[in-house]
Length: 449
Image (cartoon, rainbow, N blue to C red; front, side, top):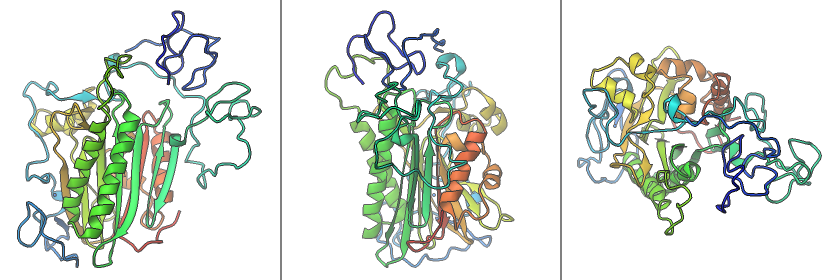
């Protein structure tokens, strides 16, 4: 996007509020026809999951990682439903909160969750929304012939992604993404209210030193009130995925590998803030690029999660008669209120400050505190790794289990599509990203759409 001086008569697109230049006939971000200008809107930790409490070895001779005992075990053994656990430094997951109930220093709002008076109004639904995964059977395949405009259905789309006939911008690649890697899958969608997708994900599979399989998923949610949140989430997810795919085959314990992956992701996001002098002169009010992160690593007998922020991981057993569980604790104002005993969970999450996050990746983060936890389930199931664009519509573990298809362990891609559709049916007010990771890890090639 150009940063040339803007025309006095019209400095922003009335549809998406992106800057426009003098003489522009259409918005470069959303393709809006600028010749008709309406009034602008108002700105406004290892845990067994066996009921006996016994821990069974997972069959892999892990090297002794820093901060572990001589056996290489990084954490105590307990059930996932015994949360709260501890983070990778041995500290409680929840942080203390101020007694007066106000957000602590280092709290920031994601624009999609901040109080109404602090965020701009967005259109009810953008005209050029991404393909609806509720009706998609297979991911769309790009046509080899000349692309035709999705708006006028007549004009040819040029190399810049605009229609040569009507000038409309075409849906971007990140508006809707689907990917499988061995037995796991993930889907990400822009949603119905945002003009772009600021979520990102990485899924992958590899082999441990003993040849047994390991799969991983990383999901990141860009903080919309920061600058370039889409770049932050993409950089973080890629860096974390690369770190895990490098560490696990070397024999690094998955919990240690997850901790290191989050640190690598933080470095990648921090690097985005290293801009040339004056590069931010046109947006001095914006914060450094920032995002949240949550990831999962699954082996034949071990499940590890790691996170910073309010993106979450849930455990949903194949046997729905067994309890499901949320495996992460939010870095958020609401979680602090509940931990301090100042509010019930229902009261805290009903408050307009509920989604103010107290932990994120970014150069302006107060302190990086990666949380990690490991579990040894005693039965098969799936791990749902997601952004708040999904869990806002299935917040409790029980609600998430109801939304997850019964065949999720064998049809992860289909299940990820169903979960994205659940969020869109609920209103689609935010970008939504979900990865479905079967436990135990299955050999490469297992799973079906």
